[in-house]
Length: 115
Length: 111
Image (cartoon, rainbow over all chains, first blue to last red; front, side, top):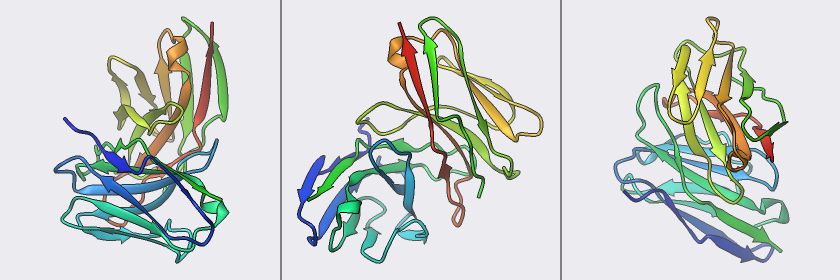
């Protein structure tokens, strides 16, 4: 079946511009996660959705970052007034949202470059 | 939140068994332990998951001692294609609980 997809795969933008990153989770997965991964670094948790609500926004690095999810499906991560330190790969994952044995399935990521 | 600690990097040779240990001293009662593999320019991929004792699948084995404060991922007879970053993840998917990835272990398999 179809996995998690993300778009665009690559995004180059100028400092100060806003960007929107999209994630299409696996159909039926209630949980959705956004992570950031800087070059050569580990995964940095950003935000987690259960259904359309976000019980954990603790990882968002600043108020320039926001995310929403509609219809328990597509999610959009928006970064306003981008800065060069925002350059990274943004990974989305989804899961069934089951207790205990949940497994996250990751998309290929969006590589964001802020010039 | 259960924080994990892994070696930053490991080297091995083709055909050897590789064991990567992850420490998670403050693991909670309901937490499961999951390992992921990540190749360059790809998202992480699930390898194996366990709660206690030993779990084995077609790819790897996972050893968890009785106190559950650590776990060891065992890769039998590695090949060059096993060169990747391996992440230990401890957590419980529940509203309000965050799943935390450690820094990962960069495994380099040499010919």
